[in-house]
Image (cartoon, rainbow, N blue to C red):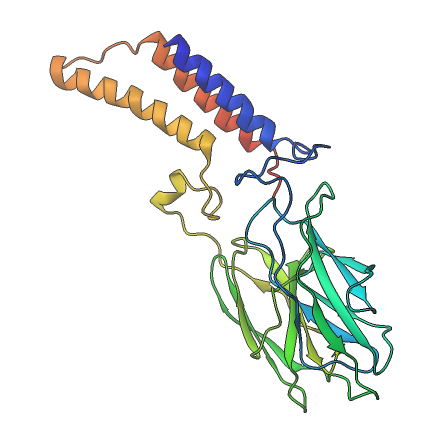
Length: 302
């Protein structure tokens, strides 16, 4: 029993330590589950639409292996990849590159970076030649509306500009946040369902058309969309905030509470009396409940 209490205490301290603000702000890079120590390689970037005389819009897919990606470094080459220069850093999987020379040949590549600044392997390059003369810029979408809403999803709709673009850049954020999150890749339709949102929360949206190497004006949705409040389910006993993540402290609390309840029920069934609960089980219940309740007062870093 002492071993059980010790293990529970260690696991509880670990869970609480991971929950503390700044717990993930280590100066050393975390160990990747696959044994690698850098972010994975980004796939070859794609060109959204066609190139303009002085600009292009690039998009890419986040890596699927290696350390978690915190951002991207985009580089360009004007001599067929002999030398590279950094042109921008971004947290979005898409970037509008401006200030290019008309009728010139370029190569672009993207490198994923983790939260400590560790770079992964650069992607294979994409070769692009800008047009000799400027072409029409992208127009502005219209008629933004909020469609179907769920506990963790919202569908947004808008109308295309007069000339249909190559795609759309769609972003969203918490209504009280200053930072926008981009949907991966250009959106091809005039409707999109955004998933993995928080229940009972207001979100703001904006969309811009992408065409001929340019990003048109942003169209802001006039009213925020609010996800539906969460309906309690039995699964909530072990799931954290409807995000499909296991709450270890909650599982510990339930496990040892059920052990104690089972002990009492079995004794009542066999002897028809309410027995005293062993001190060890009471200690486990107290520690697990204390760890769980304490964790509720520590903001989760998400």
